[in-house]
Image (cartoon, rainbow, N blue to C red; front, side, top):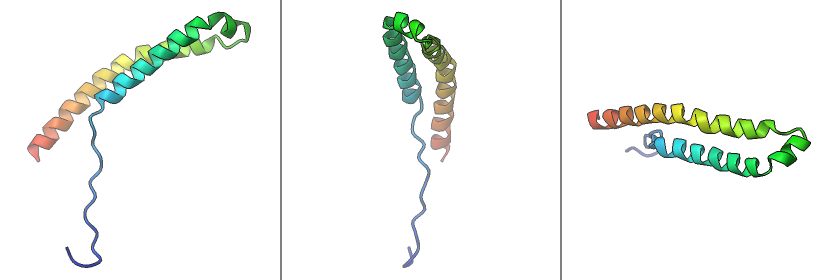
Amino acid sequence: MAEGERPEVKPLDPPMVPFAVAGIIAFAIAFVVLFLFRDTLKANGHEDWLWIALAGFLWGFPGLAVMFRHDANRRRRRDAA
C-alpha cells in the first residue's frame, strides 16, 4: 500500500437471523407487559399499543423467514468468494 492510500473498507454483512429473533422476543415481551396493563391502557385510550405489539410479534415470523433466506444467500456469496 502506497503512502496516503487508504485500505479498502468492506461493508459489514452480519447474520440477520439473530436480529429477527431478538425483535420477535422484544415484541412478545412488550405484548405481555402491555397485556398486564390492558385496563389502564383502555381507560386512557391507549389500547392500540397492545395490538401494535401483537402485530409486531406476528409480523416477525415472515421477517424471520426472509432473514433465513438472506443468511443462506450470504453464506453462498462468501463460499463463492
